[in-house]
Amino acid sequence: MIDVDRPKIEGSVAVGTHATDRTKRRMGFAEFGSASGRPILWFHGTPGARRQIPLEAREYAAARGVRLIGIDRPGVGSSTAHPYDSVRDFCADLTDVLDALGIDDFGVIGVSGGGPYALAVAHEFGPRVHVAGIVGGVAPTVGPEAIGGGAVALARRAAPVLPVLGAPVGQVISTALRFVRPIAEPAILLYGRLSPAADRELLSRPEFRAMFLDDLLSGGSHRMEAPFNDVRVFSRDWGFSVSDVSTPVRWWHGDRDHIVPYAHGEHVVSLLPDAKLFSLHGESHLSLFGMSTDVMDELLAVWDQATVAPPSPAGE
Image 1 (cartoon, one colour):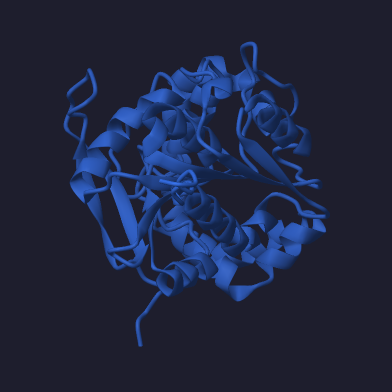
Image 2: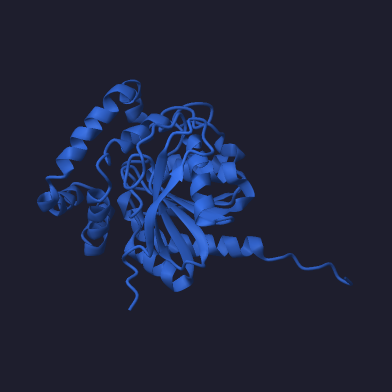
């Protein structure tokens, strides 16, 4: 029996060849599903790392012949720590990953803090990205496309000190996490009890607790520095306009989301030229991880529709 729980391939790729800094850095990845299937890149939340992919999604990829690839952002997992100036800068590093993995056309999924990166990739790679799925994604908080409220808007107040304090604070938290393995699962259960009902229900399921534990405890020695870098780039100009993303986008958002407000999903979808919002009644933030198979079903359907050749005119 094939073990769909574990990555088929896991490693890292040298990046920076397309960037101006030319530093020696690496970016981690983990592959699930079919090595010859249609590639879908999964961009994890904040915090998170490459294994933050539900077991249901891994099983789906294996059954449906999808090449599902989780990508570490800088500072977590197997990726070298590196502060971006904007969300868009991530795309230069991803180019190196795509080249190394032999990927041409692909789809993307961005969860929560992975949403801005998924939109940036759709913007930068254009026709190569057949479809983008965003699950509870973060919205811009500065500039003409900004919307107020939410956790990122609150974090903007700390943005000026993050370049100085983010790394030291992250190092302290990362070090502390090395010693909390015995209490990590009870801590997740406690978080669930304090969370909205939908999140509490999801965290009561052993397979989702196992995913979060694996992701949290295997995220690398600098795992908690990376979220501060995410917040920093989310709190400034992203380097592109959301309204210029022409890729078909499908967006899922819970109307009880206590971290990224539902209004943020409505707002970003209204800016996108080709987008559809799936409103999820009673769902919160973490509970959206339970939607992974629905998300992949929809993305593959959009991909299939886009690649069907139009019928030839009569008489030809």
